[in-house]
Amino acid sequence: MAKQSCCHKKKLRRGLWSPEEDEKLMNHIAKYGHGCWSSVPKLAGLERCGKSCRLRWINYLRPDLKRGTFSQEEEDLIIHLHSLLGNKWSQIAAQLPGRTDNEVKNFWNSYIKKRLRERGIDPTTHQPLAEPAGAAACRAVFGDVADLIPPAAPLADPTMPPPLDGIVKLPLDWPVVAGGAAPPPPSRSSCYLQGSCGGFDMDALHQQHCVVPAAPVVASASSSSTLTSMAAEAEHCNAAGSGGLPWLELGANAVADASGHVDSYAGALDELRWSEYFDGAFQAAASQQGALQAAGQCVYNKDDVAVHFDVHGLSNWC
DNA sequence: AATCTATCCAACCGCTTTTAA
DNA sequence: GTTAAAAGCGGTTGGATAGAT
Image 1 (tube, rainbow, N blue to C red):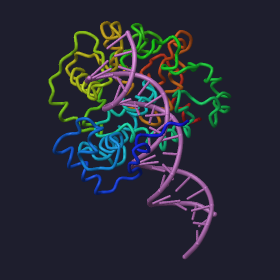
Image 2 (image 1 turned 180 degrees about the horizontal axis):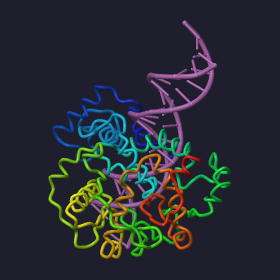
Image 3 (image 1 turned 30 degrees about the vertical axis):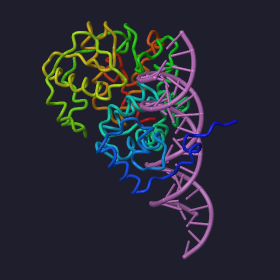
Image 4 (image 1 turned 120 degrees about the horizontal axis):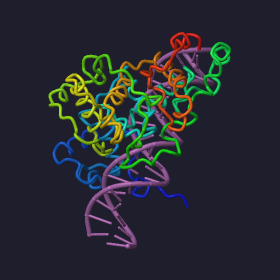
């Protein structure tokens, strides 16, 4: 027998919220906070289940919600975080101030997925689709690029350890940079998440002083601001020349001995735009032959210097 | 003007994880 | 250590709306 929801059991109201209900919930939380959600509807005089109240508050009534259309920077960030985290909408949304997991998920499903497919990129694996439009033409000129592409997305790689603490934990020797070779030092500090080049309101974060973690920082999935603040710290620190972006937990080696690597990882986030996104897929593929295939390297490492052909020309072809 | 179709998004459902007794 | 309740999460659905025919 199918289980019925709490709302069914208690014959509570369902469906869209009326302005009156919104007001009741807002007033109640403004006065008393939400406390235990299961008690909220009773105390607020609502014929809803606590779960429904919680959802309404989180997704719609919360005063810190941004709403409105997503900026290009937000869009880029969602794509990148999705390539790292998969469908961890709450973790992705945590890096987008004022956005909810539901909002991000809807945006992904209704917009980004479609655009990725149009560009011949599998939105699930972030790899080029098996036979994207024009692929035959590409092969005629460049050979079968698809053969060079790691078959599995990082998160799907069976060699990867299972996620710990609800976040992506890269192995200690995770090849942050394709080919294992240290890239040239970044020519400039990353502006990723920087207020001047993004749509974010990072003022509050900019006011924080830079404190470089002495040890790898484990980002807690429950801390909604951890990654954002880490990125902000890194942005400060990069500007100060100290390098090192403890972005996700990159592992002791990555953080300790390869600040340049980590920087380049942040650099991969930097300037990510649609055209580059597409370019990056092929760029990474071309530079990740062999060993990297096992590691399931992300396609966004556009700093890789091992690329010899003109990927921009390639993207024009495809 | 009427109907159909596609898209968007709020809300629900059910499962997993966390917390408290 | 066990159990139940609460909270959190991701997938899915359904209604409203816009655009096309």
